Structures are given as C-alpha cells and as structure tokens.
Image (cartoon, rainbow, N blue to C red):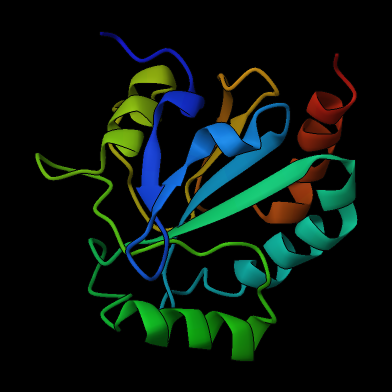
Length: 163
C-alpha cells in the first residue's frame, strides 16, 4: 500500500516508544532533522521561538536527531535531549535518533523525500533540512538547512490559516 500522508507513519520517541503521527491530524507539522554539534545548531533557538508563538494556533514541530553528517550528533538520545533543553530551552518533541539517507533511512524520511525533492536530488544534504506538512498530512514545502526558522513563519502561518 502506498502511504499517502504523514499520518500513516509511526516514529520512536527518545525512549523508544512508538508515536503514531496520526495524533497530529489537523495540525501544521514542521519536521526537522537536527544535530547538536553543527554550525546550524543555533537554529534550535529559532525553532523553539516558532513553537512557542504558534503551537496554540496548531503548529507541531518534531525534531529528529541524525548523526549521518560529519558525526555531529554522536551522543545518546538522552544526551541529545539534555543538550537541546539546557542550551536552547527546547520544549518541542525531539524523537529517537534516526537515519535520513541511505538504505536504512527511516520510512518517514523515505516518504518525505519522495514527496519533495531537494535541489538536484531527493537526498537530505545536511542537518536542519525542514519539511512543512499541511493540516491534511501532505508535504507542502521543503526548506534547505540554511533557511533560518524565522523565514518559515509566513509559510507556517499561511498553512495555519487554511481550512
């Protein structure tokens, strides 16, 4: 069966428990592959700002730590969570570390990449690639790692305002 929306997927939380993404039905979702030791790591601050400003309006941000880029998230899931919380005050969910590229890529990321290709390829090129999902569970936009979270605000608000 070809999975059509993000709601058809489950992921693992930092403790390894299954989390069905169907619980976010009706929300606008921003999916981000993250890293703790990357030049782009300060984007956690901007993501947290978006989360605090827009979560009550229906935004859901979900972070997925990934260690596939220059070994920039080599810590355990608990260490990653602690780092994000202590250094950037992150309160949005940070899931279990995953792979976003290759044969062992998480099924969610295989689907995300099939929905919106990047520049020249569908592969995730670096940490902090962002996917914006509409209220119907469909990928509407893909943003490069260097796109600061503040620049996503208008796209998110636009999706939040749609029926």
